Image (cartoon, rainbow, N blue to C red):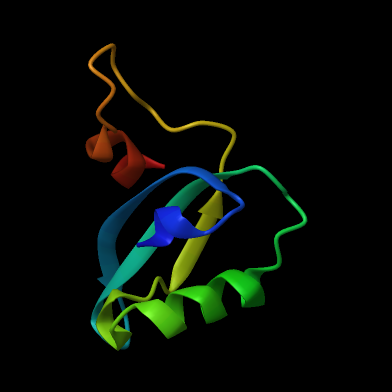
Amino acid sequence: MIYNHPDIIDCSVIVVRDVKAGKAVKLFGVFKNFRLVYQALMQFCQERLTAYKVPKIIKFSDDLPKPLAGKVLRRELHEK
């Protein structure tokens, strides 16, 4: 669903530990427009996703770790 945002080229989501909730969603994204405002992306997600799926953390990135097969290496995202 987040892929539908016009400024997102590529993204991946992982679950990380959170002090308050126990778990939180972290979004890693490659964006066309780095001027994309955090609040605008959060509003986009809140309108389209259920509350527990909305990312609490957004990490802007130049690229995502992928092997030749093209699937995102989430283990490496956890290490970042």
